[in-house]
Each structure stands twice: as structure tokens, then as C-alpha cells.
Image (cartoon, rainbow, N blue to C red):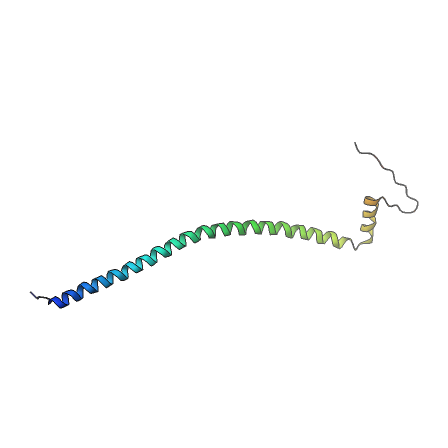
Length: 104
């Protein structure tokens, strides 16, 4: 059987202590990383929900913008403008009469 001198015994104890210390720090880093990921996943879920809501709102606004652009482009048509003037301001062509019928 081989005997180990006391100086090597202390050296091994010190080596084991250093390995344990390094492993402890590695474990702490993993725990901290996991905790940070856990917190960030909640924030990420909130941001995704907010993004979906904003996308829906954007689709509604784009649809409304398309409608308004279409209405604005129709204002260049003389017949359409004349029709609007008749309906909204009761304008008439020469020789026409306007009869206002009360609604019930």
C-alpha cells in the first residue's frame, strides 16, 4: 500500500476546496440566469400581447385610411361633388325644385 505524505494531503484538500468553490459560483450563475429568464419570460409574454393588440389596431387604422383615401379621390370627380352639394346643402340645377319630406 502506498502512503501519501501530509504535504500532498493538504494540497488535495486545498484542490477539493477550490473545485467546490468554483462549482458553487457556477451554480450561483446558473440560478441567477434561470431566475432572470423566468422574469423576462413574463415581460416577453406581456410585450407579445401588446404587439398583437397594436397589430389589430393598425389593421383597423389602415382600413380606415384606405376608405378615406378612396373618398378623397372621389372629390376630384365633378359629378360626385355635385351630388354631395345637392344632398348636403340642397343645391339645385337651374329649373329644379326641392321638396323636403319630413321623416317619421
